Image 1 (cartoon, rainbow, N blue to C red):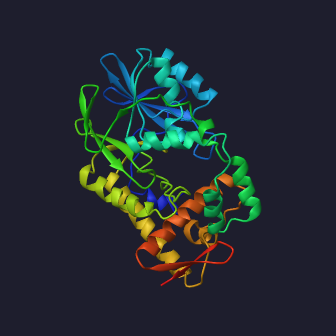
Image 2: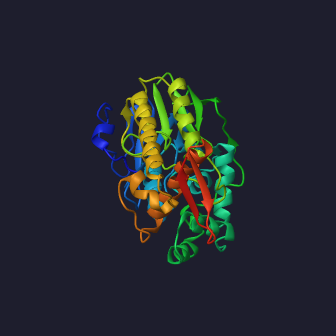
Image 3: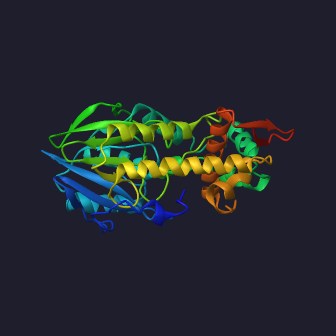
Length: 352
């Protein structure tokens, strides 16, 4: 979700490379490392993807949403600045704007997909939902959060869209692991795994270039969505995400250039990690105060996000619900709130 005060949040960050490159451009931002931008049909506008030059082509990091526009965008790049071809396709995590074109690229270039195991397997699982009806467990999950019948019906109609946003993944992949050191372009890159945004999100740190590819785990102007999903309703992803921010701060130095998936490359990693953790702590404190009166998950949106969110915006409403439940689960798991379920299957939370 967008930070409530972006000017304050970014006051001490610097952006040395300005606005994103134009379509078809691959802008060099470090020796052998190129920044590219692909369009997104949502408010974020674009996603950053990266290419690292190797002896026989380029290693790609993230791929964009799987659609015809991005097929054309990749064709232009592969006929232009990336004409030497692709050596491998590395994907930070399972979300469609990151993994969407991976299947197309690996088949087109006859190269391997590199991902962490949980991200690869969960991506395959979510894609397999396409064409199936929404499961009863998912309907119960959102009813418990306070969704009304009309919103649940919209969810039923939209269910299974994930698989339509990605090209089918290859049937095999090369697993990457936390703390593994990979040679890319003749330099060592350490895999730094985070959690919370997704279960096993891979970031990449190159000490010799002082670069940190952060994916969605650390973003300069917005906070990563940290949500509870129907498949794991008791999860505590906010605790995992906060622990990941702390771990990144201990493993990656302050003076790196951060290459995020959204917004622009920036300097000021530790400043941003502190800002993100502080923002979440303030949100939890506001929520704890608000829960002096019992509330459903959908009643907490204004407290957490500073604005009402209408169910007519189905995508944002779903993200906000998952993120609200993440905050509520965090408080419940630490004994700061309690929850009871009413006769109609709706969960009510109250501060302890």
